[in-house]
Picture 1 (tube, one colour):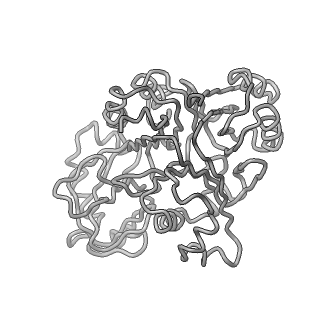
Picture 2 (spheres, rainbow, N blue to C red):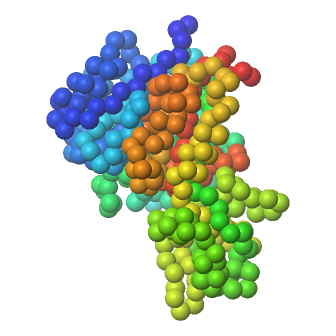
Length: 396
């Protein structure tokens, strides 16, 4: 049996023919590949059909998956807001790869999300699946509901992926599954067989002040934290910040929802990071980008490049003591990159330094998917990284 192998490529030409020739030259098409994933910047959204036809003809992949994005990642580069295509192709002997599609809008859609049996029949992947890769359109799919349906139907199976970021309005993104192209829903892959996958989820924020119990909330609005409106707490606490943290506050204030609310001590990595989207000056309530339940624990966070880098470096340390991965997929928030770091290639440079030139591709997401504490979530300000090895290299 041949060895598991990945080859990644990235091209940043504005001319599509030149970009594709460069991309394919880097992966040296030869024998058919088992899977190819392609991530396309918004500059080529209207050319997706041509890109898919060319990749199918040249690579003859068993499965092709991809989407549009505002920025793409490959090799040692992160390319933001410029014409670019990234590609990773893999030969995975002994691995079964099953594509699936989720298309909202039908009369059966809500019933499917609420019925584990119906959802399983729709996804229709092997019962021994070990990993899901999921790409979705943020305007047309309720990702929290979809993740809950996956968790109910396939308990314990990790999901990694991201929300397409190639559009600012509905029907602007394109998702690809083989020769099927859609502007709504989600596409994905299920992996099973001879593979071991390590998943690293690193968040780019750090907690400040102390945790608070939510005493009153409705949907995404928090009205009361331990007897006071959130705004009253903020007005008292912001003056306590250091000058450095007050400067970071200009980049926005974030709210972390504790994953395990009854945990004795909470720190970085124990929260789901959510954006703070509004403050009601009259009643002191705050709105965030997620639903909140009364009795939850939250803590305010700042976005911090130093913490983001240190957290990613720390989570990558165990990889240095294992055989190098064959390849990987990287899904990072579009609030990271040069919006977070003061230099380009921020996350990919940390990864490549830690793992020695791993072959991977990915994109900047409008929401990243990955497991924390063995539960799958949609994240913000986060890196979600999947590293692939053959099972016999897993150390198990």
